Image 1 (cartoon, one colour):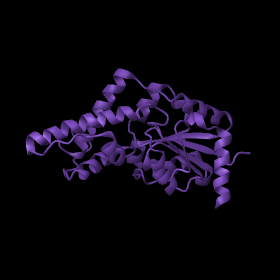
Image 2 (image 1 turned 60 degrees about the horizontal axis):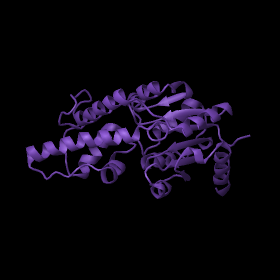
Image 3 (image 1 turned 45 degrees about the vertical axis):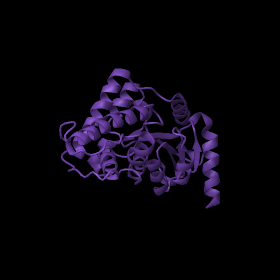
Image 4 (image 1 turned 30 degrees about the vertical axis):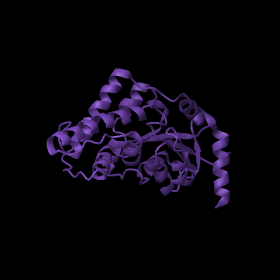
Length: 255
């Protein structure tokens, strides 16, 4: 008998190859806005970069929280506005909506690519009676999983829309993962979290899950390990169900 009952996957960068699309959409939106500030407020332009800006301030977080954290890192304070703000309006919401507009355009043009190794693992889990869910900060989860044709694989889906409706805290708080586990009817210590973002492994660790697996897509093994991942792989092809069970049992034995 296995020592876990469910696995909860993050989406972007774990199931789908949309993390890169997100990063590019964030860069386009922020660089446009920073150029606007250069022209309007005579502030020196400093481009938005993947390593210095996207990974520490935006990656894995709810959209508006990402906007707010990045702007504050540059000493920029603007009103939050309303979630209905026009894309590009000089509010946290308006900039977040502009980013989403750019992201959806890329999705429409290019479609969604999957990590085949993740889908293979998901199907193996299901074949062995393990429950599977997805927990993501993205409000585009329905669109992305629908376009990829894999929505039927996940028994529960806790995304940005669900989080807003239920008032869940974003990562690094564990709310989306604990809610997914609750929906699946499993104990947290018998559930596994799979994440590629630092904020995500922090959330898994805070939620006291049985095992937190970090997927290092960004050459960030150490960051994931130091922030809550129990094990780190560069791709899920490196582990199988038996490996997950052994790692979880070893962690339990250490306690």
